[in-house]
Length: 126
Image (cartoon, rainbow, N blue to C red; front, side, top):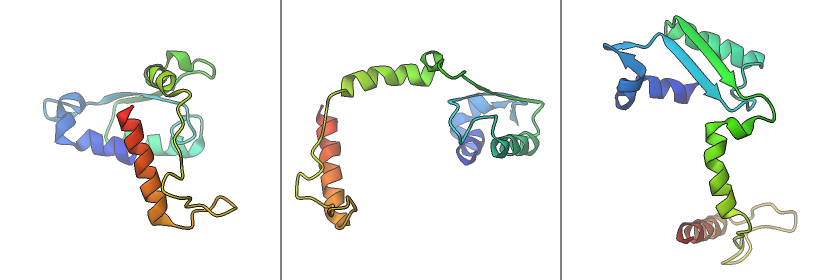
Protein backbone atom coordinates (compact mmCIF):
# COMPACT_ATOMS: atom_id res chain seq x y z
CA UNK A 1 0.00 0.00 0.00
CA UNK A 2 2.83 2.36 0.84
CA UNK A 3 4.42 1.86 -2.60
CA UNK A 4 1.05 2.22 -4.33
CA UNK A 5 0.37 5.52 -2.55
CA UNK A 6 3.87 6.79 -3.37
CA UNK A 7 3.25 6.08 -7.04
CA UNK A 8 -0.22 7.64 -6.89
CA UNK A 9 1.16 10.92 -5.58
CA UNK A 10 4.46 11.03 -7.46
CA UNK A 11 4.62 13.79 -10.09
CA UNK A 12 6.40 11.37 -12.43
CA UNK A 13 3.17 9.30 -12.71
CA UNK A 14 0.65 12.15 -12.89
CA UNK A 15 -0.24 11.36 -16.48
CA UNK A 16 -1.35 7.90 -15.36
CA UNK A 17 -2.88 8.66 -11.97
CA UNK A 18 -4.54 12.03 -12.49
CA UNK A 19 -7.11 13.59 -14.79
CA UNK A 20 -7.33 17.39 -15.01
CA UNK A 21 -5.22 17.71 -11.87
CA UNK A 22 -7.38 15.39 -9.75
CA UNK A 23 -6.81 11.77 -8.74
CA UNK A 24 -8.65 9.42 -11.08
CA UNK A 25 -11.70 8.06 -9.28
CA UNK A 26 -11.72 4.56 -10.76
CA UNK A 27 -8.89 2.17 -9.91
CA UNK A 28 -8.45 -1.37 -11.20
CA UNK A 29 -5.64 -3.29 -9.53
CA UNK A 30 -4.26 -6.57 -10.88
CA UNK A 31 -2.34 -8.36 -8.13
CA UNK A 32 -0.41 -11.61 -8.17
CA UNK A 33 -2.47 -13.34 -5.49
CA UNK A 34 0.32 -13.49 -2.90
CA UNK A 35 -0.72 -13.16 0.75
CA UNK A 36 0.37 -9.52 0.93
CA UNK A 37 -2.03 -8.46 -1.85
CA UNK A 38 -4.69 -11.14 -2.20
CA UNK A 39 -8.16 -9.62 -1.80
CA UNK A 40 -9.51 -12.66 0.03
CA UNK A 41 -7.47 -11.93 3.20
CA UNK A 42 -9.20 -9.78 5.80
CA UNK A 43 -6.17 -7.56 6.47
CA UNK A 44 -5.93 -6.75 2.76
CA UNK A 45 -9.66 -6.04 2.54
CA UNK A 46 -9.22 -3.54 5.37
CA UNK A 47 -6.25 -1.90 3.63
CA UNK A 48 -8.06 -1.68 0.30
CA UNK A 49 -11.05 -0.16 2.11
CA UNK A 50 -8.80 2.46 3.69
CA UNK A 51 -7.29 3.17 0.28
CA UNK A 52 -10.76 3.60 -1.19
CA UNK A 53 -11.70 6.14 1.48
CA UNK A 54 -8.36 7.99 1.61
CA UNK A 55 -8.27 8.54 -2.15
CA UNK A 56 -11.98 9.37 -2.34
CA UNK A 57 -12.47 6.80 -5.08
CA UNK A 58 -15.75 6.08 -6.84
CA UNK A 59 -14.76 2.52 -7.71
CA UNK A 60 -11.96 0.19 -6.68
CA UNK A 61 -11.61 -3.40 -7.83
CA UNK A 62 -8.77 -5.75 -7.00
CA UNK A 63 -8.37 -8.69 -9.36
CA UNK A 64 -6.14 -11.72 -9.18
CA UNK A 65 -5.63 -14.69 -11.45
CA UNK A 66 -7.22 -17.96 -10.38
CA UNK A 67 -4.88 -20.64 -9.03
CA UNK A 68 -3.24 -22.46 -11.90
CA UNK A 69 -3.82 -19.55 -14.28
CA UNK A 70 -0.53 -17.75 -13.69
CA UNK A 71 0.37 -18.37 -17.34
CA UNK A 72 -2.05 -15.54 -18.18
CA UNK A 73 -0.54 -13.15 -15.63
CA UNK A 74 1.49 -10.57 -17.60
CA UNK A 75 4.16 -10.29 -14.90
CA UNK A 76 4.61 -14.06 -14.67
CA UNK A 77 4.70 -14.32 -18.45
CA UNK A 78 7.53 -11.81 -18.68
CA UNK A 79 9.47 -13.62 -15.95
CA UNK A 80 9.25 -16.94 -17.81
CA UNK A 81 11.86 -15.92 -20.39
CA UNK A 82 14.20 -14.73 -17.65
CA UNK A 83 13.75 -17.98 -15.74
CA UNK A 84 14.56 -19.96 -18.87
CA UNK A 85 17.78 -18.01 -19.40
CA UNK A 86 18.87 -18.45 -15.78
CA UNK A 87 18.03 -22.15 -15.50
CA UNK A 88 21.07 -24.24 -14.74
CA UNK A 89 23.31 -21.32 -13.78
CA UNK A 90 24.91 -21.54 -10.36
CA UNK A 91 27.25 -19.19 -8.55
CA UNK A 92 29.76 -20.05 -5.85
CA UNK A 93 28.72 -18.66 -2.47
CA UNK A 94 32.25 -18.92 -1.10
CA UNK A 95 34.42 -17.42 -3.85
CA UNK A 96 36.59 -15.53 -1.33
CA UNK A 97 36.10 -18.04 1.56
CA UNK A 98 33.08 -19.32 3.34
CA UNK A 99 31.18 -16.81 5.45
CA UNK A 100 28.94 -19.49 7.00
CA UNK A 101 29.39 -21.70 10.04
CA UNK A 102 28.55 -25.40 10.11
CA UNK A 103 24.84 -24.61 10.76
CA UNK A 104 24.66 -22.35 7.70
CA UNK A 105 24.53 -19.12 9.72
CA UNK A 106 26.43 -16.03 8.56
CA UNK A 107 29.46 -15.45 10.78
CA UNK A 108 31.26 -12.79 8.71
CA UNK A 109 29.01 -10.09 7.23
CA UNK A 110 31.80 -8.37 5.29
CA UNK A 111 32.83 -11.61 3.65
CA UNK A 112 29.18 -12.45 2.93
CA UNK A 113 28.81 -9.08 1.21
CA UNK A 114 31.94 -9.64 -0.90
CA UNK A 115 30.76 -13.11 -1.97
CA UNK A 116 27.31 -11.77 -2.80
CA UNK A 117 28.79 -8.88 -4.78
CA UNK A 118 30.97 -11.33 -6.72
CA UNK A 119 27.93 -13.46 -7.61
CA UNK A 120 26.03 -10.33 -8.69
CA UNK A 121 28.88 -9.22 -10.93
CA UNK A 122 29.05 -12.69 -12.49
CA UNK A 123 25.30 -12.52 -13.15
CA UNK A 124 25.69 -9.11 -14.82
CA UNK A 125 28.42 -10.50 -17.05
CA UNK A 126 26.12 -13.29 -18.20
